[in-house]
Image 1: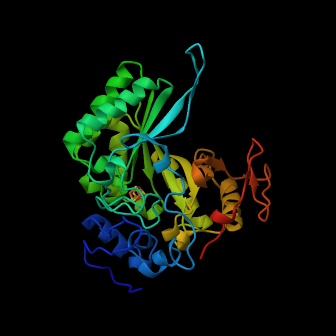
Image 2 (image 1 turned 90 degrees about the horizontal axis):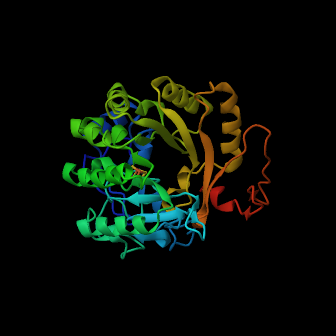
Length: 372
Ligand code: SF4
């Protein structure tokens, strides 16, 4: 791989269906200042076609999945993925609440090479496996689609939480984002929705693209949660931190971070220590660290599980309590959900036989334990 950056806007055709190679001027500069394509930021965004194709499902070495979290299977209304189900008793009382993921766009400001939704984000009409998905043929949901989502939510009052995602909701045009916020804030005001999270990487990809209206719209939600995907301390530039500070101050957002453990990017105790310490200092709560999902185009980023747990166990005692709030989880394939990994000596894992959750369900760990 060349150590020089491709011209901005170059795209690389790869069989996963999405993930064009696009950088903002801001991100391009950050990549160049942090070691180029092989540095910790460049590796996340500059395509490595040979590696991305190697384990593709239809190759001889093929393994992994196009949709390991089984999201397409759980789409219940346009863009609405309902896996974490709530329950209503026979008498109509809610026994416990459910939460739904709402993908409102296929687009981001840049595309992470390890993205779980690489099968579809970035191009229209290119989804490698799900051409029938609502967002497969169009950039955004129509008013009719939004009505269908609301009808589904009305019929499922046990859903009290919506996690808006994509793609990246903050990259959508102002009129469209305003419509989404109109609907969500109205449901909150009507007592039909408690929690709204907005998942975004826009403040990291291109903080210069965040405008005053973003703060205003997010601030219309009651107690908004901004879930920011941050993988490396170098991503927390003064410009990005200023944007995140404005979301806290002007929008009243609670900010929580999500991090994917990635080989060559952040798989060192010192790197993660610096990241979580910086996040805590800035008032952003470390929330999740994810083991890299089992998508076939991103196997080269997977940190073997024994090593991942070792990093985690070395890291946690060094962190302040407010920096050690993240849970390290595996999002189990086939849509089962997230399982936290052991901390300290509280749990043990048999790396040969697999992992058992608190319900006694057994999981084969080979899929999350097999780097290239
Ligand atoms: S910002 Fe999120 S949705 Fe977009 S490419 Fe990166 S991981 Fe995927």
